Image (tube, rainbow, N blue to C red; front, top):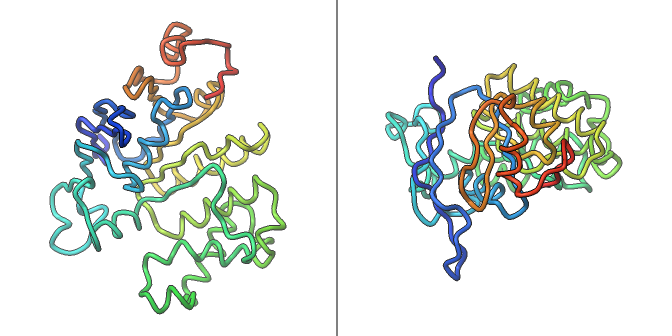
Length: 268
């Protein structure tokens, strides 16, 4: 049985005026699972992912993970609450937690390989980071990761010369440079046409399986959710409205999540 990698306990987030975004999320995700996250815009999907990564601080609740997977040193034993991490420990958590965004977040004036190498910045000191000093081994690993996403021949091109789908594949390669144990992807294919979206998700699913990664991806169509997810979590108004296998996404369930229903064409 797979070890639990992530456990959320009564996780809440409120706007500054007190309005709730997440209303007490309780969720356990085992290692190696590929989870599809669905729900209407404003349901809390992005906030949930950003709270887990600590790009956004939760208002209350716990985010439990195994310390030996994400941290080094004496604090690596037992389980740790990510919601309480600060300083060096928080940097180590983020180093092992890859984040992929809808708009790719790559530096278009840099070469493709330089963008991929930026995934190692969390592993080097401040001087090396500011001067972008990377070892021969890091550069070799960057080329390996570019090959894994099918972009080795583009390594020394400017990132601005790539298509949107190719830029997102660069973002995946950059994330792999972190040697993550968890990947959080916030609408990674929402801005791509269906064919490019399929290519990107094929790659993300493959590398997750090859590396034994736990991956949580917010997706914008039911068709993609059913095809790629091992498990589907549906959010509605900041609460979990569904948590089950993709095959159990019935019309009634979908109607409850979205409060409207158009078969396989739901836009989140």
